[in-house]
Image 1 (cartoon, protein in one colour):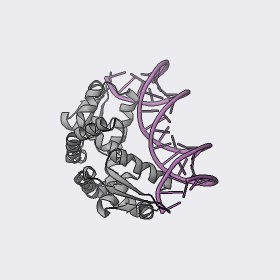
Image 2 (cartoon, chains in turn orange, green, brown, cyan):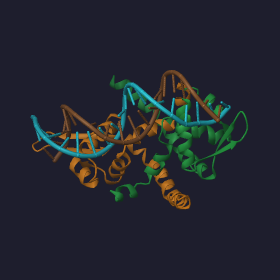
Image 3 (cartoon, protein in one colour):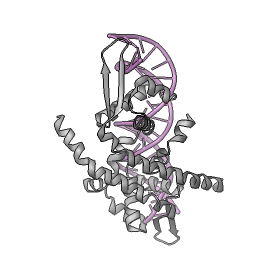
Image 4 (cartoon, chains in turn yellow, purple, blue, red):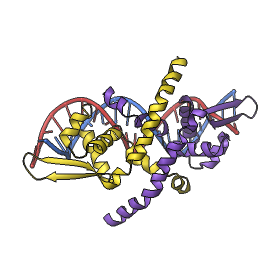
Length: 114
Length: 114
DNA sequence: CGGTATCCAAGGTGATACTG
DNA sequence: CAGTATCACCTTGGATACCG
């Protein structure tokens, strides 16, 4: 079992970017640099507060993003991509390009088979 | 909502390769060409028959792999990557390389924080 | 403002037994 | 050989209300 999983290093990447809103969150943080919690909320209007918090916490645990709390009232929390997180950029870029090229193909197939 | 999801073409890729054993299945089919159901089972000993079937069906629906049934007793079913599926190879390759490079980093972090 | 707590529904996965 | 059927569990995500 370990052999299988160890041999496939695709899985660690998936463990980071899998989650309903994670690719979108990463997209915003990679493009836009530092964002406040409320900024991310308005950039991703459909996400619930709960899920945004959960996803951000997980990305932080994996050292992909950094969380900075300003101890003031009202509170201010800023999120930004880490150096390590930024190494994911080309990976996401390749995935994004594949999606672009093959989305049309996939839609074509759908149309044929209906 | 659609704007968000449409803008991020990473998600279609995730929809294809997300699933506990899918990256491993794809790895075997991309490297090894045609495989029988039973071959895949022995290549991935820990997978259950059920999950292998489910994952293969999903990949087939997405036209990533092809399923050929030989109508004979005992039955023989062969799976292979499609032309379309093969376009995922460089994507998986990039992800795999990232995993290779950054697995050490991640393990290092774990060690520090414990 | 930036969260937590709680409850719930849906989906993914495993174990096991059965089948053409 | 290559499945299917069933049950049971765990995880993910949404809705809602509350908090410092």
